[in-house]
Image (cartoon, rainbow, N blue to C red):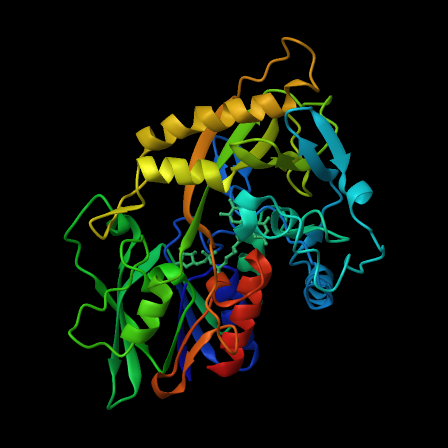
Length: 413
Ligand SMILES: Cc1cc2nc3c(=O)[nH]c(=O)nc-3n(C[C@H](O)[C@H](O)[C@H](O)COP(=O)(O)OP(=O)(O)OC[C@H]3O[C@@H](n4cnc5c(N)ncnc54)[C@H](O)[C@@H]3O)c2cc1C
């Protein structure tokens, strides 16, 4: 059986991996120019590299902990023993997470369900204490970057073919043959500022898994074209299009020296209108530098992102509105200033906080503001040999939700 998976984030990569383990022949398409990973990716730039999306995998229940322990043994993730806690931005007060959470030790999560009631009101779609980072007993990352999780999952099985830098633009169901035909664009022709590129035929498949809510949502970079009068995926795509996006911005900041006076490696920021997470990216395993420079990543508050997106919408008249360099250059200094405010009280007066590299990233759909209520944590249509998966299908937040949904789709397709 030949299965196409559209999307190589955590959900798609997990689904493709499990399908291949069960003997299926899988082709995974991802439009990322730097390989699979989606929001769990890293950005190389000017000799630096940043986890600019997903920051940490925080197992707040036993099932997720078991999966990550298994992956740790296989070298897919590694533990990060960073100093993580809460930063009261206005007071410059850092509280380590073990002082705010009952840490029950030795791999056991703080509670099977985690504490879902202590998030700040404006970041509710990021889950408790920033995707569980304050609650989980152990924290995990991909090494040397977050993208290595998807890369390793996909490389582990020989019967997965990965086509990156390839955007599927159209899927058509042949009811007689019971097959899916896929068309799409490759490489430079993906450029959203250019119109009129002719899609290529990508292949014919017995089953289709769509692993991103964007594919079913008009006006996004991944929108799949189903512009026929009647398309069998119409009802599934309209359910996906109804999932409200939760937007965020991140900023990648490289400094010429380590901020030794700052007593944490990552903090959930309280009391800042602009930031909710600040992280010394260089403190994660495999990211240390020998030139003394230090990489930081900050993640905006949902409120900051809302203000920016109101001023410059994600789509205009149903058409994707790409993030231009000029636009991002107008956002980055705002996030840098918020970062400087957060760490200023830990530094000596006049300590140099001018970055050697600074760049912002808009995440139009960083995490769904709400998820679909589904019986199996994925959309499944057995008549069409079709499934859709991703964090938007699971009641669990972030990476955990994406992985659960990818696993469900692999079981059902
Ligand atoms: C700034 C930020 C910080 C975060 N921090 C955390 C955290 O610390 N912990 C946590 O648990 N979660 C975190 N999250 C959320 C987490 O990253 C996501 O929930 C998770 O990665 C979603 O995985 P996914 O597979 O569902 O989707 P995605 O990662 O979005 O994967 C979908 C993939 O499909 C591809 N695609 C879409 N359409 C097409 C098409 N037509 N053709 C080809 N390819 C296509 C996309 O390019 C993408 O690679 C964070 C997110 C952001 C943005």
